[in-house]
Length: 147
Image: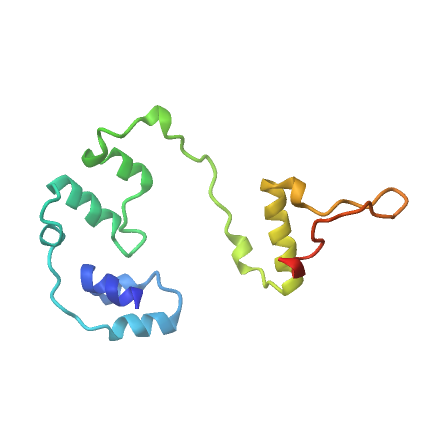
């Protein structure tokens, strides 16, 4: 549904631009979308300046290699009055998305949620056992069964 809406506003991707789509099922779906005439963004947003429409067009590119980068977008003329290099640090390392390949079972998902909760609210974590192995009274849940 979302892809249909996107293509109705931006147009259907040509075959050569489907190279980044890794799912064959998604590629087949995108190929079957109807080719319809699309109004230029300047007509879809008639009150927007030419600079605004240009930035929008470049940000809305579906193909990731054709899309404007964050750094380029911040330097775009439309953003000139907001741009401040001193206040826009650039990440020095690439993000590692290898975690997306992990097969999650229920227990592992619970562990990950507790880790995330612990980063923001350590006082919500279960009380650790004492040195003698007993646990102090704990009124907080010790598993996600209670959440």
